[in-house]
Picture 1: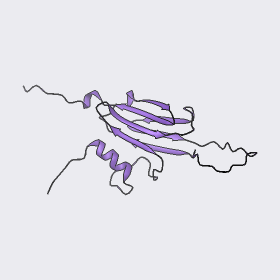
Picture 2: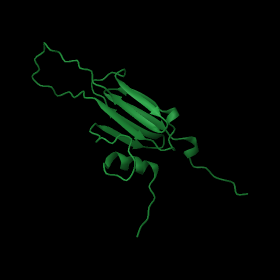
Picture 3: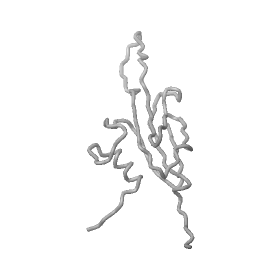
Picture 4: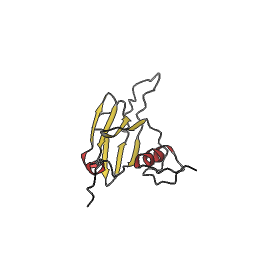
Length: 135
C-alpha cells in the first residue's frame, strides 16, 4: 500500500475540481468560469477569463489567506438594438480560493490584458528550501 502526503497545491487543485471534497471550499458554488491555475519556480499563477471587461469592472480582494475575484454584471442592454446573435458572455462571477501559506499573498500582483486577468502570487521566502546547522 502506497501512502502519500498532499501538498498545499494538491489541496488547492483538489478543492477546485472536486465538488464533494472532504476539504473546505471558499466558494461552494460550482465554478463554471474559465480559469487556469499553475505553479512554477516563481510561485502560483491564476488566469481568469474576463472577455470584454475593463480592469475597473473586476474586483480582486485578499482577506487573510483567501483570494477572491468577482465581477457584477451591469445591465447595459441596448433596447433599440436588434441582436441577431448574442455569443459574448459577460455574466457575473464570484470566485474564491484558499491560498497555501507557502505563497506570499502580500506580494501578489494582477494585470488585465487581452481579456485575461493574470494574478501572480510569489512563493514566500520562508517556503523556499533552507538548511539548518546541526549544533
